[in-house]
Length: 118
Ligand SMILES: Cc1cc2nc3c(=O)[nH]c(=O)nc-3n(C[C@H](O)[C@H](O)[C@H](O)COP(=O)(O)O)c2cc1C
Image 1: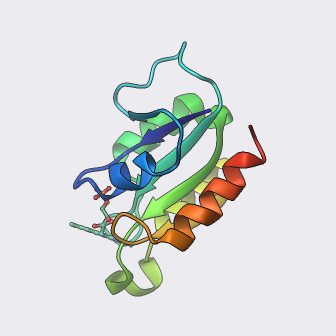
Image 2 (image 1 turned 180 degrees about the horizontal axis):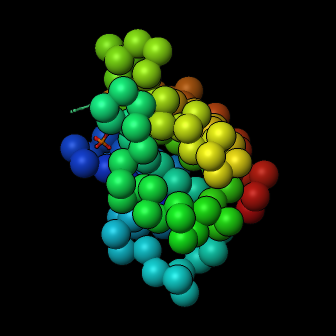
């Protein structure tokens, strides 16, 4: 299991570091790295998937067991919406949406999900 994060301002990276598995920047993930991937990504511009995440998923979506998506509730119905778009487009379950570096409850839900794969 490896955590891959797409994080611009560091919130997703912080969240990824709390999960208890090796975590790598999405730009550094290689084909011969661990093939069981949990993706931490973000939402921008009304729920869009960042290009970095989209390109990664085009290549590796079959390796991704789930996502956690950072966002901000100020974006209303678009809060963390990229997670829903990824779920629909790639069939990858959205485990949680989180703000800031994630609350304890977000970390707990995610860790519980990851344990079912390890
Ligand atoms: C231009 C811009 C657009 C954003 N759009 C959304 C959005 O549509 N939905 C959302 O939940 N958050 C949105 N956000 C908030 C970011 O997703 C949030 O700050 C997130 O925590 C960033 O994650 P990172 O620190 O890992 O880069 C937006 C932020 C910016 C600067």
